[in-house]
Image 1 (cartoon, rainbow, N blue to C red):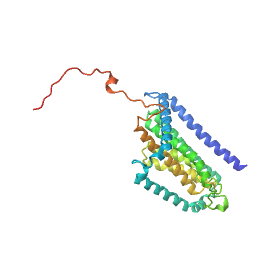
Image 2: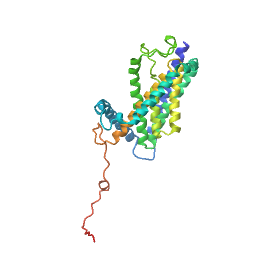
Image 3: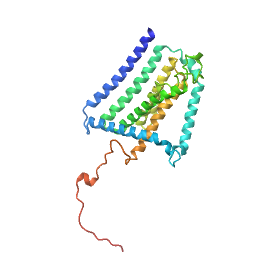
Image 4: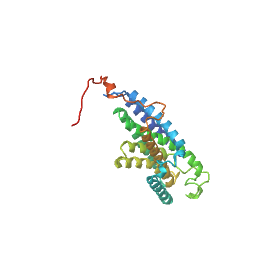
Length: 298
């Protein structure tokens, strides 16, 4: 009964956080600001941006195998292999620490574990909502687009966790005598579906501030708190948490890269075509000067 009540309380807190975020956005959209265009126009522009980029993302991902050998392929970039090596080393280190960290965290009380998760959800989701609201108020389209891209990464990464869990079938720590080598056993420990979206949202917050360390460090640290809470419930290994963080971050970063490419390709077909700014002459309705001139060289 006590466990059921705690779970219910945890769901209520998350519901309150989500509701508060929606109320915040609603308040921001109704607030008067001494600027133009209107909030409605900004929301419509964001909708078009999101729809167009999701369409182009899908096209890029589906056709990517056709360009593996191209001159501009990511597989020809040394940076790609350095990043891949760094990610592999980070996850391998976390795998080596599975038992050590579990021995320190799995005896955490349920109340403390829930508190860590609620702080993580509340801060990252609330920060995302606040940042988007600020973008609306200040007419900062780039900030809003970074938040939307991070949210897209969070959503897609969350869907990917379903397939990853089914493919690896890792048992949770409280199962199979607490062995962290129980792979392909029909479990659902790897990767954490709770942690994954938080890292995608944290990537959006960090990107909006040009990935400055004083924003990136607290954003990702707060997202990681949810993983420690899950470990406190003995539901995940540390490598599950790190894998989820890398998945959420990596998916968001992929979309940031693709969206920058889309911005440099205005001629590509879109559901909502890009609006081309009128020329200076057309904007001012100026009449071209008339007359003649003579020029000569000595």
